[in-house]
Amino acid sequence: QQQVKQSPQSLIVQKGGIPIINCAYENTAFDYFPWYQQFPGKGPALLIAIRPDVSEKKEGRFTISFNKSAKQFSLHIMDSQPGDSATYFCAASQNGNEKLTFGTGTRLTIIP
Amino acid sequence: DGGITQSPKYLFRKEGQNVTLSCEQNLNHDAMYWYRQDPGQGLRLIYYSQIVNDFQKGDIAEGYSVSREKKESFPLTVTSAQKNPTAFYLCASTGWGAGQPQHFGDGTRLSIL
Image 1: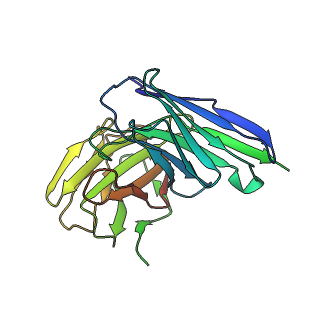
Image 2: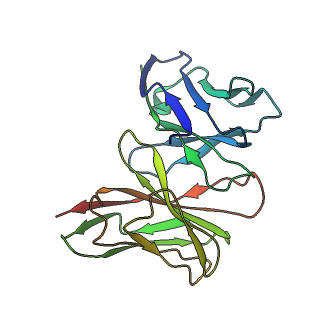
């Protein structure tokens, strides 16, 4: 049973645009929602994370929006750059960071 | 420099052969994880260990085995029982306490000869 659904599967955005990646979860016990960025041939790296007690979190050009009632959260990338081209994964876990459940990933391409 | 080292980067397995993937961390992390990554399926948890000499099955443990004899090492064996082993394997670790991020190695790509 897939517990975290991620969309879209792929996304192409022009430089300077704002790509948005969405995730929805089913397990209401989840209380930690990180986003990971992965470049080809590398392991994922933590980008930003949020807990359900806030509706938005910003770190640099990256923003997570969180809607607890809808069980959805999304990643926005402001002023996107070609260097942001990567695969992005949302994830969720309960009791902190134990046993992350990952979404299926979004391949983002930023064109100049 | 602290981090997670996975080796080898590429590995080839013959039919009926067991192979072992290495994962070493010098972050002094208690918990370690093995994930399998396939195109379009995200990362799926194979095994995890929260303490030395103890480990639990993840969602897709069949055909795999692990050991945790030392805090810094968590090797994964892909056995001949795993009929579709071709994938990218990722090892991760995390420190104690809620909200600690998982740190990943750069993976091992396993292929069948």
